[in-house]
Length: 112
Image (cartoon, rainbow, N blue to C red; front, top):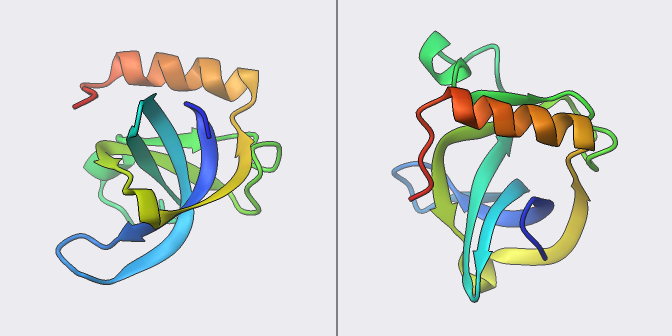
């Protein structure tokens, strides 16, 4: 697993102990400290503010995803050792990666 990989991880729902396995975007790897961003297929039902925090993955099939997807840049989450499967789905294409970097620079995203 490397930075910018798309893998499968156990992701908790907000304010709940429930979770689901879903694709995530690995944002940073620093030793055992790993941070990720959620990937979602739900966009149209979100508020305009939340939509402004979602980055559209245009080349989602090339990234290893089977449905149109967005990276939720609202918050980065820590990845616990037991909460992921080492199954790399893919990476963003060069075109999407360049767009993603530009998107982050245009938003108030801060890696915390």
